[in-house]
Length: 252
Image (cartoon, rainbow, N blue to C red; front, side, top):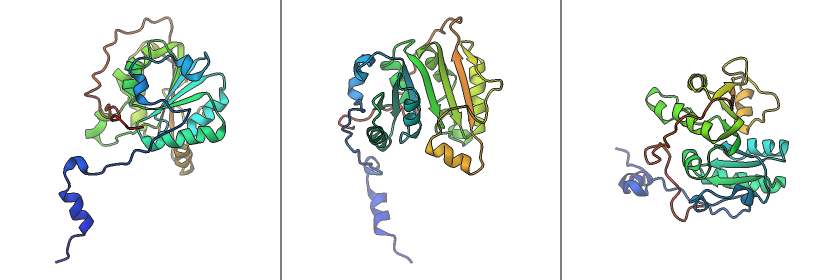
């Protein structure tokens, strides 16, 4: 009989709460906003040091998209969020290297941010690029972007505010397009439910790699219709949402 590997035995005998512990690297950057500052809705003009339209990227990864978009639109303030510490850290480093001052980064779950820190009609644009597709049928309810999330996002958009969504998973794009079709407050800005590319739309490192393999991306662009009243909205129960846990005290 082959003896089990010692590290494997150690992992098996550890209590569940001590397995797969990831080191949290403190983020010290003028681009970073600690989660505790979101206990009450911030004064976003003060956070950026200037009054300007505010846009949000949900799931900034390591910052490739937001750097390009912020450079394209220097008169816009951008908020880039992610739930992963390392992604936020790398995004802040890229922003510092690029000398960009119109982006702030927060480690927070999207629904918590929208509910607690962003008032109604506060965003000029929302960008959601290639969120986790959860391709297995039994995991579909874990997808972030569904009817309820889109209704919440609609209430945070300014009149004529834009919603951009992209995915490498056609099934996810179909799901989002179908949900948007049921919300009259959105109007499609494309001739089809989704397209394979958008002019001047920045591509992340992941998106470029995917396209380089000859595989398609699916882009959605809707706009809030100012002539349609906002829906009656019940804020989601953040305790029930998948990955809606706030970073622990002391986490950066």
